[in-house]
Image 1 (cartoon, rainbow, N blue to C red):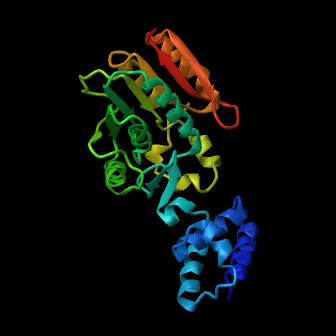
Image 2 (cartoon, rainbow, N blue to C red; image 1 turned 180 degrees about the horizontal axis):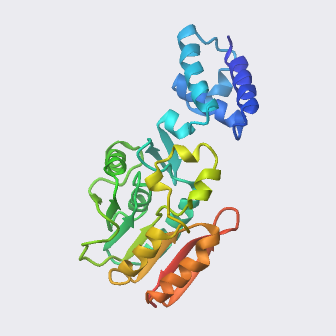
Image 3 (spheres, rainbow, N blue to C red; image 1 turned 45 degrees about the horizontal axis):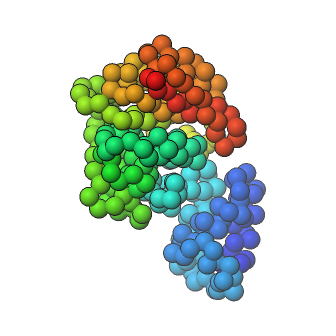
Length: 280
């Protein structure tokens, strides 16, 4: 069976199963199965796939049609110029979080070398992206999940375009900021902020992420509400990702903790998403 016919059949199957962006998803799976860059598929449409290739692809297609995230199937995802390893132990990094990274890059560019702390680091996406742009700083990624931290450590070593050699990136199992004595230039956090109702109504792919990385309690702010008072003693600048309906409440919480200046930044769909808070 020729590659183009396989691509068309897979796209049709994904369309029937309501998979978002079915053509793109089909291309990504086929490229992964064949070990090719996606754009190389267009140069090999007449290629005949052998029985072993077709059997491997069928298994991948079944998994994606059941709404398993493609990042779990391929084992990686793109994030801010990095190719990060993904798995069931940590939240798949989302495009919205790249906005937080861009804001952090801007904040750090004029700072003398110092410490940057990321709370709820998951795959390590935020520290690794920042370290790649600003290797002069030290980075500490914190998470309560040993599985997530194991993935972050793998990403430090194995990911192409990782931070330059000699950059200090350290991972630590920790409950938010408890017990940390050293002050930081910047604290970033993308903590769980979904409510149980939002999790229940989310796309099936979302529910493949660990509950620990999703569930923010009754109003989604349980962990954020605990974190903000801890940050005021450790940093002058804080960046928090949250849900669009939560942004004003999060900004209010930061002001109550002593951060006098707050800015709410929109996400890619112009909804309030990132709260930037500073002491001055």
